[in-house]
Amino acid sequence: MIKSDIEIAQEATMLPIEQVAGKLGITPESLEHYGHYKAKLDIHAMKDLPRKAKLVLVTAISPTPAGEGKTTTSVGLADALNKAGKKTVVCLREPSLGPVFGVKGGAAGGGYAQVVPMEDINLHFTGDFHAIGVANNLMSALIDNHIQQGNALDIDTRRIVWKRVVDMNDRQLRHITCGLGGKANGVPREDGFDITVASEIMAVLCLASGLADLKARLAKMVVAYSRSDKPITAADLKAEGAMAAVLKDAIKPNLVQTLEHTPALIHGGPFANIAHGCNSIQATETAMKLSDYTVTEAGFAADLGAEKFLDIKCRAGGFHPDAVVIVATVRALKYHGGVPKAELNSENLEALEKGLPNLLQHVDNVKNVYGLPCVVAINAFPTDTAAELKLVEDKCKERGVNVRLSEVWAKGGEGGVALAEEVVRLCEQESSAGFKFCYELDSTIEEKLNAIATKVYRADGVILTPAAKKQVQQLTELGFDKMPICMAKTQFSFSDDPAKLGAPRDFKVTVREIKVNAGAGFLVAKTGDIMTMPGLPKVPASERIDIDENGKITGLF
Image (cartoon, rainbow, N blue to C red; front, side, top):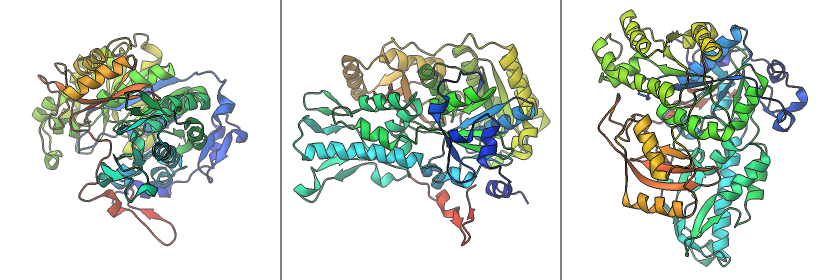
């Protein structure tokens, strides 16, 4: 019988966290312990160390119900690099409770390529998300209190853009009316909740270079508009100091380990719109100071996670990857070729060929739009046939990209040796000096939107709704037009329609809303029907999660 992920994780022998830290030369004085196997790192003690690592970005094809395995590949690759004698750290985002209890059931890797303690990582961990939620809702409380106490800033209660948050998928809270029940209970108004990881504070935390920068970014956040159309910021409400105080520990990266005791930094998350699994600048930079190779992940497909990582995070952090790994499965590519989920176990070269353009477009984007060397990692399944694997390899070779089979789910680091060798070759022999962004910051908002849509998605351009056009005009007049763009788009397609699989053509992307996240330093463009507060499925993952009288958790993957 095949063991579940949680059974494999619970059978593992973990090293005390001091020993894991010792591999990187981290002294006990720089650790803040959360039990025996988790610790926060003192970023202040490491701020003057130089970056030295090669940076490896792991991304993927457009996700499907068949699964891809980015986190599993990231963990297994880091273990494999360590086996090859390369001092390696893996950097991952923190899982959010909404997906864990909702659609996923966990997000700490899989099989023999996991980070541990997986239960802690998937649940409360070190309380970072709680701190983000508290800081966010403190801001909400201060807005409403300011209105209650006379509204000296003349806040238009119809134009409060700051929402409350909760770390749980809960559609009931998307749109609410609050402040009911008389004068003592505040001023009635419409409000709503986002999931915690969609908060601008998550983005600020992920992109801040330190505590001073964190406070400066918090101060700039636009939370509302006055009745004379003036942006009201957190600084106007004197909120940034208190919020930064709440976040003083949350900004520090969390150190844990893989099943093979590779150091792992887990910090931050999917910021400011839908999830795209990107960790913080603090974590990435710290890892690059302490290792020879840093493996990091940008979630969903390369048109979402990698695009944001490269166009937003790399700009803010002043670094870029030396190599990119694009994860795919034969099963997922057949799904993109039109095969139903129930029939993916059978060889189907015709469907595979039909689905391959999805992978090849992601490859072209990484190589040609961003100018980075890359390798395709095929996450192995027992049902993959030799003919199917050869077809993928041949099509990628035509684009000048090598394919490596990844068997890390079943074999841990040993199953990633071939992939690790190719990653090292790319980092040492190929050049990332041709790296470029998808667009320039001094372009107009529409030009930047069109650049992402045409270059990355292969759309014919963007359509702005009348409301979005008005928002573009207002944001330009307010001087927010020189920021990068954070696209909120379905992960399932290059288009804004999740049903358009493969590599669709002859479509335009509809942008229905654009708002400024001035603290984070980007504009959020919402496309299609994307939501920042998902609901739960018919059978939530939480129904399988349980605990016994000894505290043993089951059902997390």
